[in-house]
Image (cartoon, rainbow, N blue to C red):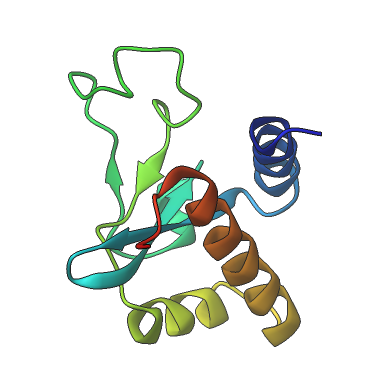
Length: 109
């Protein structure tokens, strides 16, 4: 199964069961995470994906979602705990997000 197929399957399963996914981004400032949720009320501080954004103008699955700004792991963990996730579920979501990031982010040589 391709990385894209695994990602699509995970996305659908996570949205169906939890109503959100976690993404991981590797940037110049280091590792950051984002919350992508179907519902605004799941987490504090989410904002609607703007209709004029790249995602809003496509068939992207996030175009009708609420998202967070970039969060450090230290900032993200309490939000996940407050949402009712167990420590095992948090570790699983972070693990998937990190694995997914390696499929879309070129790692330094």
